[in-house]
Image (cartoon, rainbow, N blue to C red):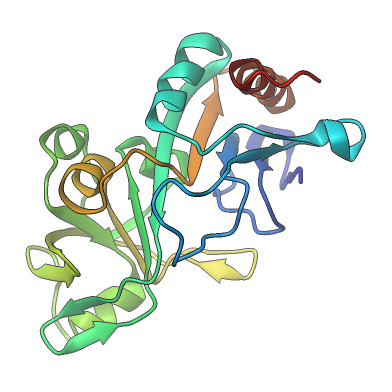
Length: 238
């Protein structure tokens, strides 16, 4: 499905498996895994698909296998119209806690320093994930307003810790609540992808690769080039 919102200078375009746009209103292409998150699925069991707004259904989608970290470098190396590509992994079914305070249904994401840039993330306090956090596999996280309010009522969470099953993370920032398409970021817990992959969930599977075209490049043109590159990599022909 092809999504566009706002004027051409602030368009959001996503290649996505359903009608929920994830990105903020920026020039962003999001290439996603082809299936909704199955919290009981074993690591690496899902098949990725790209969906575009071209031709008949048989040509609009094609299996590309599960998205991997190698696909991020492949896109940035091969698709010259892209400025930034950032990986995103989602961990489902994990409660987050601070002592006896627990949220059972957070949205837990693992990504890198470019995620905040592409989503134009604003903070109430603290900072976003940095390249050093990603490089050093730091046990840190940025949390949403609802997570902050429920786990740390009446106090600042920055510098304190939250725990997930198998890992503890120090809070370094609190996101300002942002509503988009009937959803919001209030229950997010965002950690460095390197930390999640090397210390927690393992593997190199991704839910999404978010990309931004270079200045002066039209979003549809960059989207087409990214589509063609991944179809070539997977051996699918349009």
